[in-house]
Image (cartoon, rainbow, N blue to C red):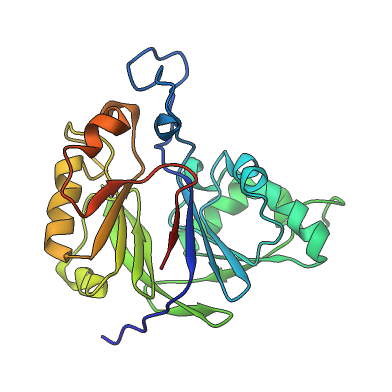
Length: 261
């Protein structure tokens, strides 16, 4: 499989937490009461910027806060990994970008994601729309490569327990969240990576997410130059402590981390 390496783009980790975020409501564990910024995690999402394009992967419940915090003035596209609410719940707030750009936002996802969005946000898809509702152009995707502008995106199929989800490779960078299994065939798409980001929920076994050891085994198999762990729960532990346990080329991602690739 030919992989086109796209250089000179920026990745911002908008959120690196699991579905509950960190701190978790009412929790008083060491992680949740930590005062360190690296232990504060909004729901997982990334911003990809290249050649004037701004693309978001997933719009979770913290989407508005993330956009405000990073001062994102334009949004060219949203790409969804799957349909769980911690990855789609903020879609309504793209209407601000509709107002600024005077056009719909391009949205990419599988047919199953499209059906859930229709159910969760019926007013977006109404024939007779109420003034001011979000405007989107939905593009159905599968495991075939697609392009947004000049940016080529290669979907990577993974399993989130029994739910098929998509990760994405953009040049030398790949991002996979909410998964605990990738077939050998799909792993071929992850060869020769500069940067690999994958979920590492906690140390204890989980039914639908890679654990820390599971993520490290995958990284050892894929052999990227550098890796960043994301979709992290409060159960994993304190940033400063866990980072010391990791191999020298593996890092815990944290909110607002920016990478030049």
